[in-house]
Length: 306
Image: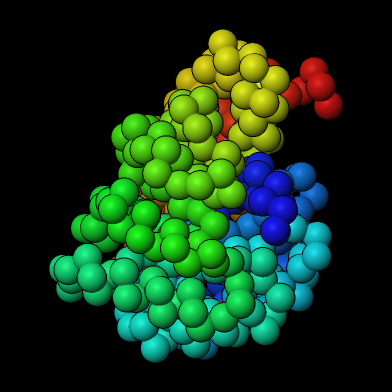
C-alpha cells in the first residue's frame, strides 16, 4: 500500500444540513466540491466535525454516500465509523467499504470507562470486519481514553492498522507513536493549533476541523514545512492560531461559527444540531470580521503565489 495518498492536508468534513436540519445531499456535494477545488489531499468524513455523535446510523450513511458519490477517486476518503456500539460501528465500516472509501477510522468506545482490553477488542473487531486499512482516532480530551504505546504495539500486529489520528495536545505523543510503530505507518497531527510543531516532530500529515475554514493557510503551512522553511511556517501557524481563537470566541460552538463563515462565502451548509449551539444575536455581526481576518491572512501568506 502506498501511504503517500494519506500525506497532506485532510479536512474533517462538516455535517451539511438543509433548512429543516436534515442531511442535505446537495449541500454535501457543494462542500466536498469546494474542498476538492481548494486542492486538499482528502476528507475525513463522519468524525467530530461531522457531528457524528448527534446523528443516527442512517443519517451517517447518507453523508458517507453523498461524499463518495461526489469525490470518490478524486480525494482520499477516510470514513470515521466510531459509534455507541461495536455492532453499529461494524455496520458503518462495511457500508463505507461498499462505497469505495480508502480507509476506516474510529474513536474508542464512548460513555462507559472501559478497560483497555475492551478498547482493544473494539478496534480489532472493526479492523476484522472489512478489508480496508484502519486508523486509530486518539482524542482523550473528549473520550476519556489516552492511547498507550503498549496497546498500539499490540494492535500493530494486525497489518490493517496503518496509522493514528492523534488529537491529544502534547506533541510528544506524536513522537512516541512514531517511535513505537514500524516504518509503514502514518501519524496524523490532530490539534490544528500545533500543526507545524506536529509535523516537525514527526507527524506525516494532518486531519483537522478548522482546515475547511482556511484550507489555503494549512496548504501553505504544509508547503513551508515540506521545504524546510520552518521560520516562515511558524509565522503562519501564529496567524492560524489567532484565527482559531477568534473562531472559538463566540457563543455557540466553533462548528457553528465556521458554518457561518461558509455562508459568507456563499456556501450554505446549514446550522448545527443540538445540543450544539448556533451563533445567534450580536455574535452574528462578528462573523464578517473573522472571515475578513482569514481573507487577509490568505492574501498575506498565499496571495503573492496565486
